[in-house]
Image (cartoon, rainbow, N blue to C red):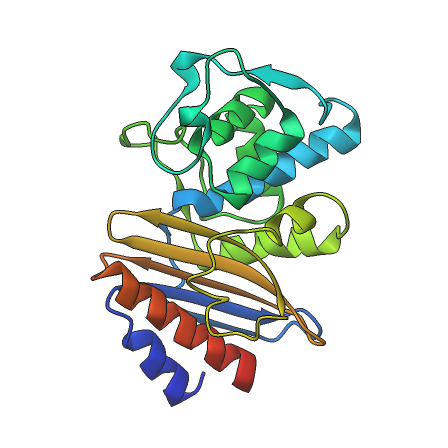
Length: 244
């Protein structure tokens, strides 16, 4: 790792974790790669498990899931504003969970596939620093929290990359929150990614689809002003694009 990259990472006003890997030759770099609050980045393995079930024929993407008042939770998303009794397909729930990070959609999908199955999938991918212990917007408790490391996020995205086409990769390309890893990259560059935010937490994990594609995960906690953290993440991303 170069001194310039270390300085950029150290300049982000937060505790920082970083993982980068060239998908062409497997070269990798890591910095502060430890467990963080997962925030919404842990929605990527939920997305993978939904599509794994769909491919296995045990969950239909066309299945309609009714929205109940008791299902609605706050935070990101739009289903909180919808009327009770609305029926949403599993595929549309997956899109809402990913593209606008809808927490209600995420919890409905956890209900469909089960928390144990999502944790088993993460374990099978070698994501040994990751755990889904609660639904979104539930109060954390010992043993009941969501955790992930930057390297684990990269492992999950590598699994997405291995199975391109309609499904998780195509949905991640539609991400609407682009103020972190994609911010300073060329507009025409395809970036499939998932962000995550909590108080003091700003994450982004991305597949950057260039001639030599790479995966980049930058996690932060105990951060200062959110815009300063996001800009720091964007500057690290630009460095990786230009220099690595």
